[in-house]
Length: 209
Image 1 (cartoon, rainbow, N blue to C red):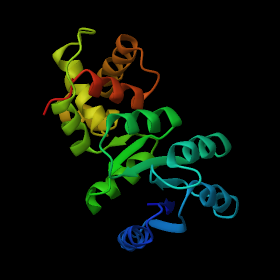
Image 2 (image 1 turned 90 degrees about the vertical axis):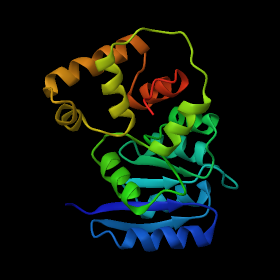
Image 3 (image 1 turned 90 degrees about the horizontal axis):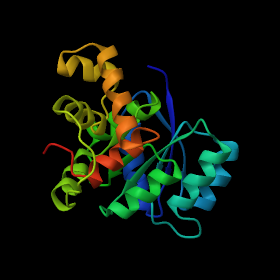
């Protein structure tokens, strides 16, 4: 597998160093820089552009939300994974609106971190299953649209970061059929992309626990 370059942006030095140690144990990941806030990150990207940024949300000077907006605008090929200890849906909303395509809680393990980086690198999305399930339990249902049981199954796997090919294998259907289900989900929900689709699923309590 090709080497994936990563920058860690977090204002807690001990957490950054620990995360770097974990990432350095993964042979196809190279941490090219660390930043303690969004301002440092933007400066660092000039000399060490990375493919993926692990972005803390609450940082001084420029927080993760504003930093994500600036980075995505200037470096559209860079992907951002929000890495946070905050489980509030408002943070999720703001990071998705800013352009993040992944959302992980800081208590995540190495396996999930590795899976998230691979998914985001391959232009998929990835959201902490623990976060999604917790929101599913606490977010009230809203009367909205009607989706079929199969569409719910596809939606659940999209929320778990599965690609269309992986969904097809998991459900025992063709990729073309998955493409059709995904397209209909976009039409029914009005979602513009997969992160917006995940956000819709959380708000409407459509994830199967």
